[in-house]
Amino acid sequence: MTTVGSYLATRFSQIGLQHHFAVAGDYNLVLLDELLKQPGLEQVYCSNELNCGFSAEGYARANGAAAAVVTFSVGALSALNAIGGAYAENLPVILVSGAPNTNDRASQHLLHHTIGTHDFGYQLEIAKKLTCAAVSITSAEDAPALIDHAIGTALRERKPAYIEIACNLSAAACAEPGPISAVTGPEASDPDTLAAAVDAAAAFLAGKQKPVILVGSKLRAAGAEQETVALAESLGCAVAVMAAAKSFFPEDHPQFAGIYWGEVSAPGAREIVDWSDGVLCLGTVFNDYSTVGWTAQPSPATSIVADLQRVTLPGHDFSRVQLREFVSALARKVERRDATMTELARIRSEPVPEPAAEPAAKLTRAEFVRQLRPLVTPDSTVFAETGDSWFNGLKLHLPGGARFEVEMQWGHIGWSVPSVFGYAVGAPERKVIGLIGDGSFQLTAQEVAQMIRRKLPVLIFLMNNHGYTIEVEIHDGPYNNVKNWDYAGLISAFNADDGNGLGLRATSGGELAKAIETARSHTGGPVLIEVVIDRDDCTSDLISWGKRVAAANARPPQPVR
Ligand code: TPU
Ligand code: MG
Image (cartoon, rainbow, N blue to C red; front, side, top):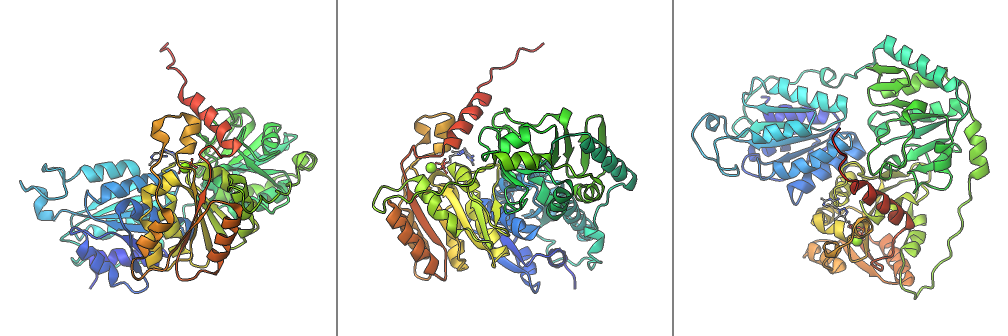
């Protein structure tokens, strides 16, 4: 017999999920039972619902989609923060919440876990703002259509969706699932508009001396990474990548010009973009952070902007054009335009070898990055948390195959611990390295216990600078000091009597080298290395960027005209 819960489970399997993340609560227990019955769909437990949402977010990064299952209100409202993150980061995470019994809906009953009124609809209303589709299942007959609508919309739009299921319906009988192609069928461009957009873009580029490609973070959501390499090769131009899109264009490709981030760009990358008379922006996101406080953004007058479903260029605006199809068709149409490669060859600087620090000398950020570099191999995925970890991570040169994950649009500190957990569950073949600051770690540290539980070989570098240094660089005050923790001791506490996580602490280059050596041979659980540095030992990029962001925040109100 198909039940509402088993229908959902089948759809999860059909869209390629082998896991879903969960925290139990009485509104979802029967649903969790139904999901457990699905062969090949494992239930993975999290320490709290915020982490559950971010774990699913990380799984979606590895696997293309994910699901989190939580209880009503006390659970879901925490998870919704991570769902906002999935929206901002273009990741289709399906949030499923248990909900009040259908008989309580129009009654005068008061229910636990609610705000204590007769309104049980507030969670759905909030979810509607943070997802591309939010549905409430209050009848088993409607369940298949509503589930399919939510999942299908999430996959098409690469955004999260929300499904709440009344707790007395999870095991109720409903219709069998039909073919999944009805749910996941691809959305195609309007053919005439696609052709017109490609013609206009090719003509625009043909009229430019120095076109460049600028890759943005929505490129992965569009599934257009391969197509972009082909387009770059037909145009022959330099390709710069925005910080949030690091690794979305191969860094070992000869046309890779580096990270474009205004004043804090990689050497040469800013010049290549700023000197260009025609920037082809693919899946780019320009916000206050990515434009370095509105100081760096290609002019729309000299740009083509190809978004997920829309292409704009001076004098044109084409809707219903899928980014992937646009890039792929444009690659077949463009003329070669490789002047920026000549420029790049002139200004490109070879990386200067960094001298090793004295092994006994006090550990510095620079020495840490030097020792980190060789750890990044083609099978690595590096997660960089908000803070100076962003800048440390961005400085890494990624060999072909290596991946890089950041959460720059949402920017929730602590995101990376659960996201790394979810990613490592979804991609066990990858070597996952997390870079995180002390302040960020304290928000979501519990999820290391789940890595220990599942024996995941994650390597975390915790940069302990005893404070919110990124905030110090934006605006300092006593609120930027962080209570110190015994981070290595915390891992022992998480181990309790059956875990095999390892916590290490390094205060000199020699200790760090030894810790890395120990981590390499450790098996059966994660390793956390606490990297102890001075409070003000940060990248110059963080200082420059922080200054610009502070200036943008401090703009006085403009008089109303
Ligand atoms: O390397 P460092 O010291 O900058 O990193 P750490 O220690 O992780 O400090 C991060 C400081 C920080 C804060 C407090 N970055 N952004 N914020 C603001 C913030 C507050 N709460 C959430 C959930 N997200 C935020 N980004
Ligand atoms: Mg810190």
